[in-house]
Length: 217
Image (tube, rainbow, N blue to C red; front, side):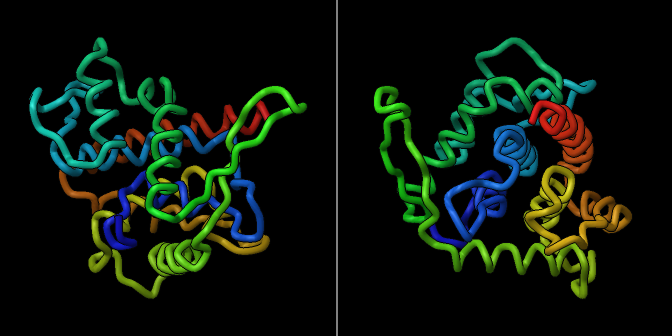
């Protein structure tokens, strides 16, 4: 998996990483953000569509070749119909875990096995390629703040920034300058082709999920 071929959920996971340590910014929000990225990419690829607010597989056979996306697509196919808001949160940690494993296999993260209280096994992920994260973040800031015209932003970059800005603006805006340009974000959401209705719905649900997570922190 090269840097240029990183999926939306993989990019969103890396963007939220704290390059100064092992913790992830807004860790309790990560499952919903990564799941939202996976849903959006499946919609952009034409494998999920919206039917009266329901996330609906287009067919029963198509695959992406990406194990994270295909795993979620299989889950949607095998489950009873749900609205997008449900899929943003339902078993979202499974998608995050799959993305982390994928990034570890690609050399972006390193998995370290530990024991909590010396008894309970756990895995801690450590960032291995901070330069990639910084490059992704610089590109995302250019997309969010300019000077790149919205008309020249790719569908993938537009989706990444729209979702990241909705969920965790601290990953994009440095220091205390965290006023998100909402009109720009809305315009970026409109750059996502066939996935525009889905992305706008998912962004709204991500914001709801983020607000709930913030209360819980």
